[in-house]
Image (tube, rainbow, N blue to C red):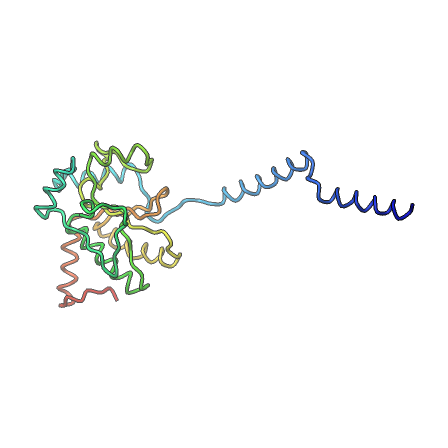
Length: 237
């Protein structure tokens, strides 16, 4: 009888140990996790080096108007600019890759924009032996209108804050998979170019990219660097 009683008590203890907690206990634990999670979220502050703003978009569009760069309406107009070489193709190499979902007729940009990304991707490769990737380049008004339907981060297709992609001066450079050191290197690389008024970079929050507007005076600076070193071997190191 004593053995049976002991066995029964052991069984009851085991059942209690594996039984799910009551509703009150579950609610308390959930509240604690929520509080910890909320505290963690409050500590995460989005404070990029290169911030976007409404004022920045206004300034960029004013500059593009000064350069008399058209906002490309559709594929027919895009093909005309590509044929006339006002837009030039981006070429993949060991330093530079293009996102596989970017169609062939969208792998174009202005000549000075290509100068910029070729220079930066070369310097990045020399530093890290890894390539940079372009996720987006030129777009049309027609394409931008469709993009805005499902991408909250996409700029307007018209008006005083229209997306600068529509003129071919802008590239989105992927930062996915970058280490903190690589990320900081890109920031340090672009900062003096921004200070000289050659580029306007913005680190986007909802997309893992640096959105970089390149101005036409970049080419003058680019060629001056070649002339200074007197060589076709252009390097920052």
